[in-house]
Image (cartoon, rainbow, N blue to C red; front, side, top):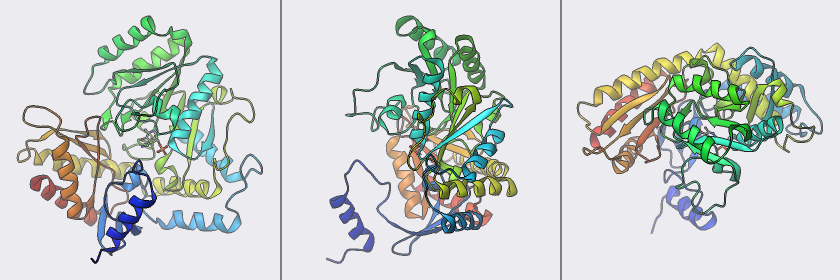
Length: 422
Ligand code: PMP
């Protein structure tokens, strides 16, 4: 039997790596440029996944490549805690300036989103000397053991991995699926039944839940969370790992709400594919852990830091948040127009360039099957899409904000066909 190169690689993958590391498609990457990707057999794809919200500036942006190359020739690693370098400090200064709120801020760097979330909680605990953490149903905060404990979705993230650390509580997320009143009642119930507010260190939330289904938080809920945290001395942590860096039409989603969190976690598109994450927040809270309490061998890696400096410049020079919002509007219009022919479309939602479509059966039940089908039909036609949602019935769009108009048009045409063919 003659197997294709992709088939051979899939067979080797199955034999050499655990099934727990699942993959979306049955093809392997060869190279990528801008919003396009080619597999090892030369097949071209339009990449509307962006490595899960990482490639907001697109693959191989020349300014990012140049910054990484220049840094690579100087040094690729010293471990910041052993021999520090200026790029780390100047990137911290930039993030302190760029993130919402005019108060004094400090930033620490890590490698992954999960690590940023874990460290944000450590910092909040050190500052408050309390232990409890409240997160939300449908949330995704990462796969490391504490981050996955905060994650509000059992399958496939938590099943089989318990017991989880104590004093983590989940409330319903105040978005289209729950009113602020539902959330408020649930939190007050927690305060009565499980933990007094004076023992809660932090409340962690995503302004738009990513993996959970692109669920946009109700604006009045953000104001309420801020008040609740202020009343009880709780640290408010906004997880902007997926929403940050231009995805929602602003540099950070929290800018839409006019509310500054105490701490913010950032990762993904921060460094255009090099592993870098950050916790930025109130200087006095960030300073709570003692020297040596924060860090990591690769945390704030110089190549990733150099890439992040370039990403910030590109975002501003090319006005990418605004461009993403404009493209997001076109995508929403396309999806809204498809409603007439595709009755499964139950909701089109998002913020700026963070757009998703929710699919349901005629009886209103989530239609995961149809969702998978749309994804497969798009993939067959050369468009990479991701699904999400607690019920796996949402298609999300994470196009590079630099995608050329012609490629965007091509992707919309494929999407149109895929929705109809499914
Ligand atoms: N928080 C959010 C909101 C995320 O979307 C993700 C990743 N999808 C994470 C945390 C975890 O990031 P990482 O996979 O880099 O650990």
